[in-house]
Length: 131
Image 1 (cartoon, helix red, strand yellow):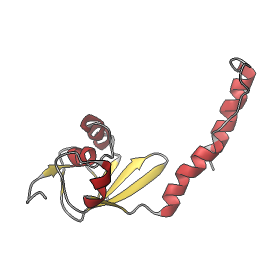
Image 2 (image 1 turned 90 degrees about the vertical axis):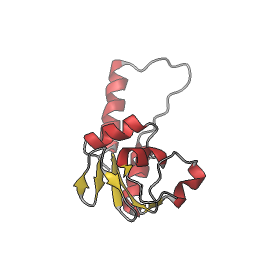
Image 3 (image 1 turned 120 degrees about the vertical axis):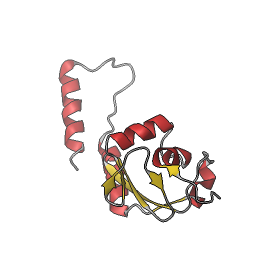
């Protein structure tokens, strides 16, 4: 697709739809949440074919392999041509655990929770995050 072009990591992350905007991708790089070959990278770092990218989106650390650097944003169906998801299964399970414990049901018409109920809900949510 692209012949020996230097593609910035923030632009690549945006183009393969890992982030909604390029500025969000740049901010994540600056925060140290993007790692290429065990090194935290700046947004201006270029991406080459075959590199491994780790994207930290707490609580999960996603791992991707660059198949082909791309400059322009592509549809979600075409992303698999440019990047391969090699995230270990145990990392993906962390996301399931987090969502499993965080659901609470309140009957319709009961109004807002009282201060005591709110504290109880917060306590239960904090406990479920440490699964």
